[in-house]
Every structure is written in C-alpha cells, then in structure tokens.
Image 1: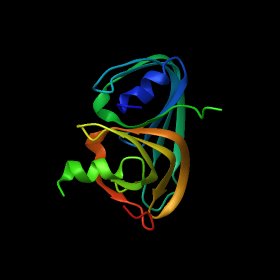
Image 2: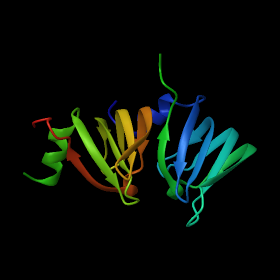
Image 3: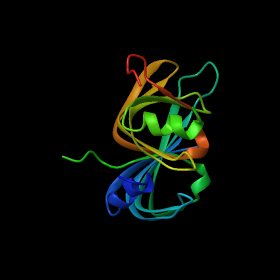
Image 4: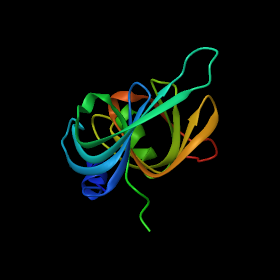
Length: 83
Length: 76
C-alpha cells in the first residue's frame, strides 16, 4: 500500500465505518471518495452520541438511503476485516 | 533527523497516534502521505486511557493528527 487513500480504493463497494467530528458515526457502503475524503455512501446508519454533564451518554440512530459526506468532517474510515 | 526522516523510519512499525480530540490510536503504521493521512493496521482506540474499540485497518485523516510516536518497547 503506497498511498493511504489506497485503503479506501480497496474498500470501494464494501461497508465501511466512518467516525466524524461531533460524535457522529456512519456505517454504509462506500460508493465513491476523493482526495478531500468527500464520500458517497449508501444504506447508511448514522449514530449520534450526546454527552451531557451529569447524565449517561445517549445515542440516537437514523437510516439514510444515500449520503454525500463533506470530507473535512471525517476523522477515521475503516473497512470491514478482510478474512 | 528531519521530521520526514523520522516518519520514514517509523513506517511499518508500531506507533501511537494522538488526535486533536485527545483520542489515541495504537497500531502498525502501514502508509503515510504528505497530508499526514495515514493507515494503521491492528488498530486499537483509546479514550481517556481506556481501550474503547479495535479496527483491522483504519484510515485517519491527517488534519486530525497531533502527534505520531513510536510505541514504547519498539526500538527504532
């Protein structure tokens, strides 16, 4: 693997987990990406974690059919484990 | 040793990467580019010193990186 973006190239058309800024996490099938980490995902489940003081963290999830993600919010992107 | 020389020596070795959020990732540095985008293998995620998650391969976007250091016990 010469270039870090090669990992995403290998993950095209596979389900990936994406950690975003603002305690958000996405899981969906990766259709496309570019050098900014703009992503196109399908069948996405978004999980939002809210940490309020003196309260247990709460998570809410929602499902989206098709999603464009602006790259500057991306922290981490992980493809499924290869067997 | 220049910064880029350092990064060339840690490639393929176990590293600890701290992000500006304070989250730490430990894993083997598989790949790196000029934006400091990087790929870790056998990645473990630590929040407040506690292991929270593991990933097989993980791509990290370079703008979130605060530091990259060689893991303790892995001599360069």
